[in-house]
Image 1 (tube, one colour):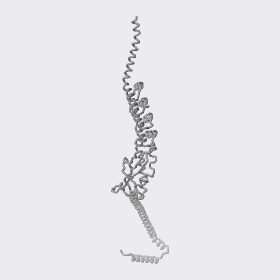
Image 2 (image 1 turned 45 degrees about the horizontal axis):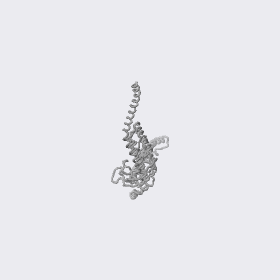
Image 3 (image 1 turned 120 degrees about the vertical axis):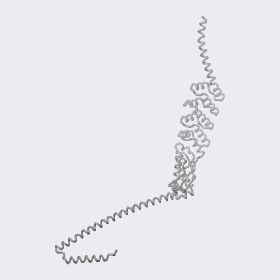
Image 4 (image 1 turned 180 degrees about the horizontal axis):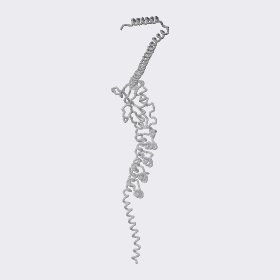
Length: 382
């Protein structure tokens, strides 16, 4: 009886003991699995609770990565960076590079005394921006005392512009060749008023305009406007000698035209690097130096051909008129012959009617004979 009662009492105790042993073993395994990370965080000043570590394991978040990044932040002086914030970045795409990028950018911003939060970097990163370049550009602008706010920097970066290069260009202006090397043309081709072709190459020094960087035009617009201004300035010059003697007049005239309006750059200076007369050594169509003389020659040649065509037209009309006059003479001669043929008929009719006598007829014949003789005498001998 006592043995049966003992068996009934010991069975639940054994079950509870087994469950407690299993739970204790599980806790021991969990403790041994996270003890290294916990101790590492504890001695680094970035304390993390066991419940946070267990939650990371349940959410399949690499605890070693999260704690390591929190330790990096604490060592840099960022004490308010929690593992929950780090997990929120990792769980979006489960990509460790996202967390590393945001934490690295936050540390750089904190060291540079920039008022940028981890939430700002997280939002910009997942919006498609480049937080590393954003922070470096903000640091460079802050050191150079450039008025660059976080909102403006984010807008520039999200617009597809290289914000770091823009800030560096603001601090250190860069030089743009006009025409650009990618256009295929090495020199600008312009013609002065006297018709002489000039080949010009310019170099434009520009500085980024942060205020216009989002909506402003790019380098291609600057190159096109400067090229147009140079060609226009040379075209308004009286002679090519004025350009060769004072090329700085061209650059000053172009610079005063406000070519950097509505662009992402501010033109610092325009320098004429090279200017020469075209076609000095060439003989082809593209090597003609005096375009004005060539145009005048072509115009004179065209005028000559037009006058020749007009003269040929008049000659053809004169020939046609001559043929018409010749035909008219022949027509009148035929009429004369017809009239002379009627004379004998009229004389015969006069004889029949008695209006003409025989003596009158002979006198007329004598007169005709005398006239013929005088005519033959008066003709020159062949």
